[in-house]
Length: 168
Image (cartoon, rainbow, N blue to C red; front, side, top):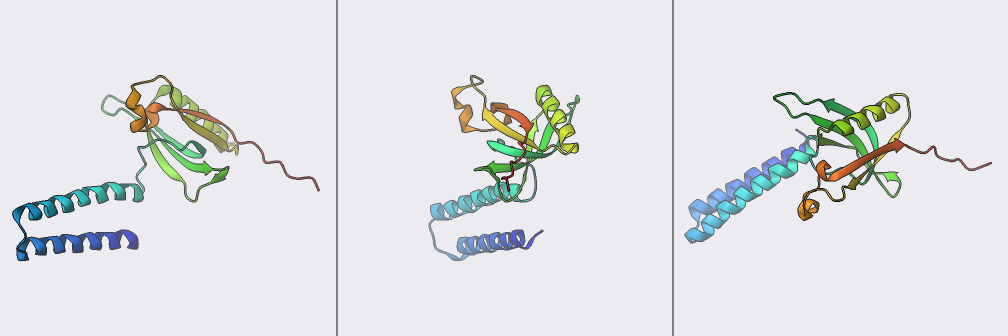
């Protein structure tokens, strides 16, 4: 564990200890104690979900709008496993890469498999690949925008344009 996650762990332990002390030593009404227990429990699950993103597990959320493809791993479906596509991308904002790359887990799709396989061939040849993820039009229900993910996104990948150097 890193020092940041250690600190967060100890902060949560201290909060739980204070909550236990409040439950035992206070003269609070029962409803307030129950609210304290529910609040600390909810905080635990919220922190666990937030820490999942910091520990290097791939995000199951949607891909960034524009990105540079760094790597892809393809797990084809079997009878026991539905398969998955893991991509490592560097998000682009205003034409510049963000500070750190991110891993994403996408559900397996044959067309996306072929697209990523072709893109990785070009990456191995030294051709940088730029991608975009746009919301799919006309698929699913009206509420798809509430839960972004690769099911609701259409990915396109192309060669990154070669930068033009100014004349001397």
